[in-house]
Length: 330
Image (cartoon, rainbow, N blue to C red):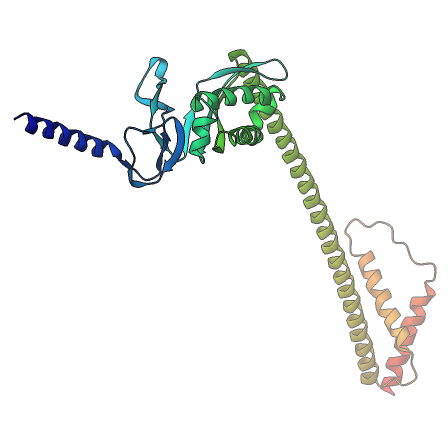
């Protein structure tokens, strides 16, 4: 009976010993093994066998964020020791901290850092508390970077701040086996009175730009309107010029046609009456002179009739007509 109990105890011990010697490492995780207090090896992904008594996993302090929300809507951050090291990219969100800018303005800033453990051995043996070291280094670096910038530069130079933070943190994290991939400023909250002054300044700047744009629009509108009036006047002047030219050409053509018609009429009259030696000019002057005398005596209230000084011209013209008719009768 005693032998059976002893064998059972031995068998149980062997089972426990063998079970504790099996270590299953999940994907993107690793375990650092120490043998008798000295670094032995780093376990890869999958099933691994260790000596339970002489081999022991080394613990590391890790940072966790609880799902429930604490006071003022802030997440509760806790730290505890674990044996498995997560090799995936990790996100740390740090609480807000007060920093002072170059122009002595207190500002609340909180940052988010994305980092990844690339060397688990350094992450354990080169630093005692990796999450706390990263947080403190981020806070101090952030104060140094913001202290070199004015408030306006801080608000408008997030990319520059992120780049400087990442460079400093990545350089310091290489000793700890940590690769800092990205740093982001989540919030920048100046004091309330500073924000109110900035809002007034922004409103004044917008009003200024609006007035400038309105003035430029009015100026451009007046310029375009004056150019339109100028072109309209030029076009009207050109139209009137062409109209006058065409009217003058028309009158000239009309006079030429009238003169040609009168010339042909005189020629036909001369041919009809058979005059060969008489001057047609005398006939034309006599006709025009008789028409003029008719117009002079046609008014009802005409009292005085002025005769031309050269009254003998009409007599000579009439005499010329008489000669034409006499010649025709012969």
